[in-house]
Image 1 (cartoon, helix red, strand yellow):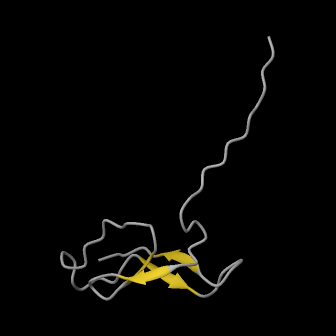
Image 2: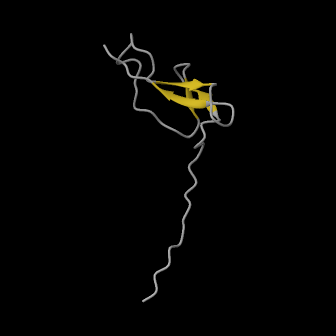
Length: 69
């Protein structure tokens, strides 16, 4: 019996978080990604993520934030 490992590579759209767009609420979100965060439900809280210019490579990074109320 011969077993061979065949690598497969899936393309993740905007996996490096280089591209951002402004949503209907005026907030920036990474292009091609969705978020279940609804600012209307938590009006006093900021978004749990932000575009970060302090990246390892490229121009931008994605920063997650804990929100404690």
